[in-house]
Image 1 (cartoon, one colour):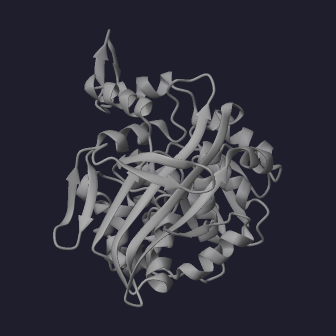
Image 2 (spheres, one colour; image 1 turned 45 degrees about the vertical axis):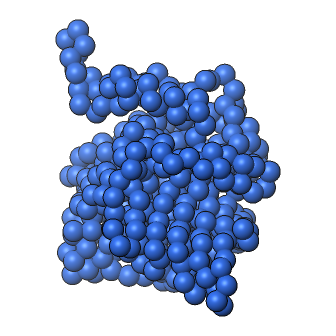
Length: 390
């Protein structure tokens, strides 16, 4: 498989490192706006011919199409901000190759609208776009499909729960994922789906609950946050309700509340002494790069899918999850835990696509495919999952 990887920040770097020795990968073009960053990642991999570098503006469709055609890529993998999802999605269609990302464009109940509305065009062209194929969304969605296939006869609720016992030394507020996307999902209305109401929104950080995370992480307060699984899962998994809740911590939530209260989450440029700048860009510039936090972090992060329903006439609750230990992540890959956990998602999916195990046409989510070979590969990639009866 030949891949054009757009974005080599923390997650993009993790993708390249996990994929570098895989026999199915022929070429992975490391493309980034910051060419120095692309050089750094290439040097870490040491396979320069297999991993050429290119400078690219993710908002420049013509340039992305040019690179895709020059390298004859099979797939464009989007590892940049949500701002560029529609652009790269459209570029892949124009270039005539497949597409994969780890998030979705738009917000609230309209999330993914641009992509889903064009599914017919992609089918007619014989091309495939897989949306939301990271960790969460991504592997969390695969867990939901696996639960439907093997663990339940009837599902009442699927709840994605994300929690981490991670500390970043030296910072009071340091998001461990893409800063602008993190702020956006924490300030937008959160989405809930119910089969008799459809999609609707609730206040971010609402309806707190205590959830017991496994492998020593322990109980943490989780709250509603906007996330893609709520839009994806109901399209392919039969259930009555879908939610997403995040364990953020009071300090983190208070920082987000202040950012929102002051309007610093806005992406609309304002005039500051003759210079036009978006407030969220200022906030992002003031915070540490998540890709550079590895030496300061400790702890574990967990993403899982909590499924409630019925099996053989009896009520059942199961939590399917993946825990990544930061110390092991740094030891094995030199990447911080959140970036590495996210990076495994698309790499395993590309493996299945390259070998023809996953295949399809149109615009699909991870739930549209057979979950069994995916979970099998998680173990082969030494990225283990767990299943806990609740």
